[in-house]
Amino acid sequence: MDTMTYLALKATGLPKNRIIGMGGALDSSRFRYYLSKALDVPSNDVSAMVIGGHGDTTMIPLTRLASYNGIPVSEFLSAEALAKVAADTMVGGATLTGLLGTSAWYAPGASVAYLVDSILNDQKKMIACSVFLEGEYGQSDICIGVPCIIGKNGLESIVDINLNDEEKALFAKSADAVRNMNADLKSVLS
Image (cartoon, rainbow, N blue to C red):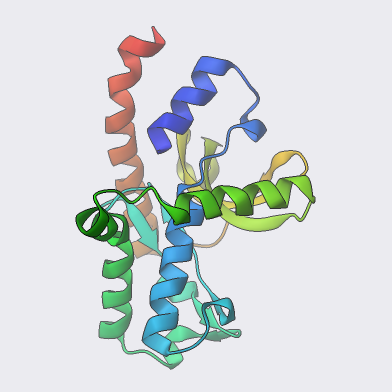
């Protein structure tokens, strides 16, 4: 998905605020679902985000920043339980594919609708989206999932959250994996 977003940006010449990949929104909704199951609370009471690439080995569920009604989920769940939630989130799409033959059912459409609603109604929601980076998070010339403000102009801004050293290392590794996939585009973009 990140490579498709990058291709759309490069092939169309549209401004970067108009090319937005929805993988982070989808992954974040799965993360909130798994957290709500582990906490046994409504998912609407859970705030959580996934950054990085939209893939089983490239997404980064930010367990450190996840909260239940403003309280860190680490107050309610053990480190082992949080690690399981993160692992389940990362294989959520593959799990659906194994059960149904595809993961392209309700969730991708709901994620797109969530983004479009924020654009059409100028809601300025913070949503993890795959967007073109130009130095943010130490990355350039790549589309990858980061927190974004989405409003009437599409991508209105990229939110720079303070990642800890482990999260920074995971993000750099994720970006490397996305770049390796993007390398296959050289013949298409030439």
